[in-house]
Length: 235
Length: 208
Image 1: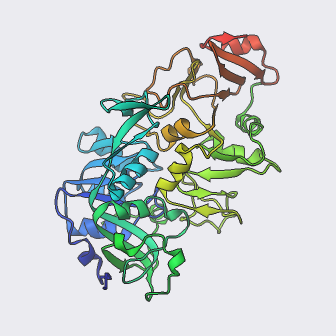
Image 2: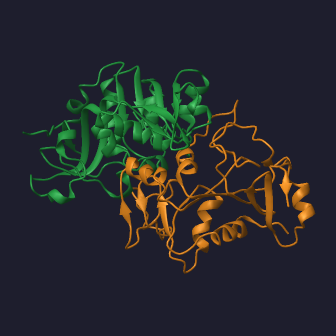
Image 3: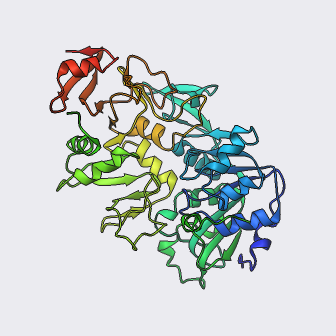
């Protein structure tokens, strides 16, 4: 089995108009910038994107939104240092926003990957986010029912990867990446280095390869914050 | 003199005890870390880290090593990383002893509003709704009044809620209040602020 691919264009070629795409990262940390830029080049549109945020500046997710490719965004925190791109499209009614508490977002994705169609959480009970959702009482406390979240494709970023798709992550860049890897029909991982099978200690594998469809090496990946400091714009 | 941001943070740090796992929100709560002194506190950052260290020296910043406010931070020998689902599992699962959060409004029944102002753009709740639903004690740190001089400590919140009946203690520039049966109880006032000053600046019911 060899899941490695040699070009970013080939990696994202499965993404079709109208698909739901999960994109890993918390702000710029763990964001697969090169895969997102390849998706912009690829041209798929009318996408629903799941990310914790709504992009920052004019690169990565913000660039994808700026190019008009995203019809709907599911996120927990749309504000960033420079949220201009999302803000303008949102105010103009050109992008739909589903705002989800961060822990509920993570658990909906986890449930999607784990075959659990719905679950009850205390988060948001009695607030706007619970409106229209079933509630129930367990052991004297009230909870809100939330549904799983799945995607056609997940774009994620790891540190090391091997030909079977076993992955490690780097520091706090892990965040949503491992859960998103489990919840998509096709998971595409960019990693800083592809290593021979066995080089990642089996005890240290964070995402087992069963969750990963394609691995592509992007040495020295771009960091959103550094691109923004340089006032980069993509494309 | 009302407390300034740093004095509010220092007062909030007094709430923390040895052995606690604590989550600090964005803004003034972040400053609380500067005042924990020798206490054995472990800071959780909901983007997936336990054992948050201080800010890095210039030139040593790592963009993969950030807190929930997206500021670069540092590791400690006790640091552990984990994914977002695990992070909120420990939050909802009651493993975090306290959260110190900012607020737009707090009501006398403990309702908290801190994520959106209708008609203006949605800021987003991030992890705040999960934190207030799951941690042991919720401490709000905020200015007592808004820029127009109106009380942010209210009988009822006017903004969309982050959680209902979730706040335990409120620390403002004027003093400290606890949410109790029937309203708020004054715990202490800032130096030079009288109980009358605090009552006059507060819309919420204050009980003795």
